[in-house]
Image (cartoon, rainbow, N blue to C red):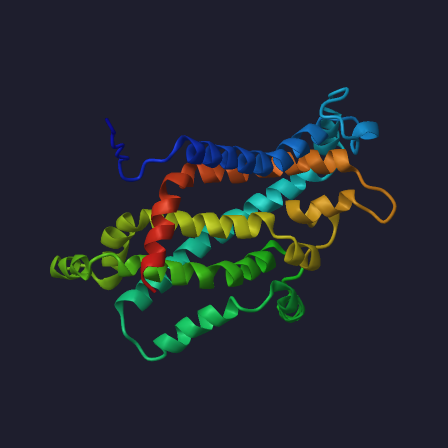
Length: 282
């Protein structure tokens, strides 16, 4: 007597399931290992910093040195200021620009969108010299304001495109109902549309924050003096031509990652929805 086995649609064989889970485990180990290694290195004394031992004579001396004998706290405050202002202004400018382009037809709209898109095609390195000269003429070198303006030029074009796609998914009838109720265009945007755009705003804010928090090239070129550096620029002071303080650098990397991780935890529930919605229409 022969029996016919039927497999439900979408089910996997044991071998395929094993292969899938094994691949996920290997990928997870590869992703987590560098972070774990940096954490362990930050706990090693200087003489064991570049050894292959996972944990040997663990110590918090690297963190003590970082907080007491370096300008890390100054770098941290500078980065919080620059990243915070960049995030708030970037979200506001990108949201208002995206909404205007999504809802209104005005002369120069297409050239504006093409300009926003084309600015993303230039490598950051080739923009350092012209931006440096511009900031020098405006007297904004070695000033947090100069870095904030620079980071806005990076974050806003991409975020405006993304917010435009997200606003395209919100029904126009909501705007019409706002006008019927006597709201002006900005009132409609602020009171009716923005509450519906939280996922897109979360993605925009996260992108703007990460852009300003971890950027190195502009921070190193525009800021001088250890007390004026941001975190990304400050890390470079631990590596000189002749010596490298890997323990302090690893400890700084761990502390730098904490605010970004906290920001991600608060924004992550909106990130997938916002990125998906922003990609559905252009």
